[in-house]
Image 1 (cartoon, rainbow, N blue to C red):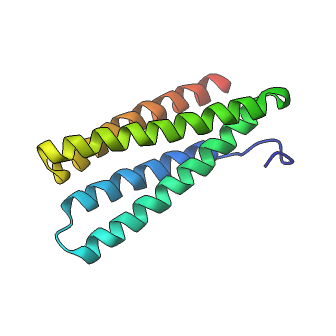
Image 2 (image 1 turned 90 degrees about the vertical axis):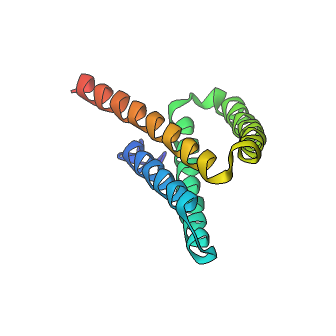
Length: 129
């Protein structure tokens, strides 16, 4: 990607991965059988992997060479701490409110974040033209 001078379309693929993650989380919340839950989890894992790799790529492409190591270290710590705290919060909420409700609420929150990101990306693309 660095040799090509960027990652054209990567932002859209990351948004698509986010949409897949939301759909998979909703499918997991609605799953009544273990097989359906396993498929939803596999889709969720794939979508989150695409997003993690794409996010790291976008950060690396956006940062000056001299700062890349520091920024990627901060990125990695932020992701790991966020996942740990988010897992704790969602676990506590699921215990109090039920797993299905918490998964659906998390998916709804993620969908709102995706709408915001898509809107921002769209405005940025229009202003670049």
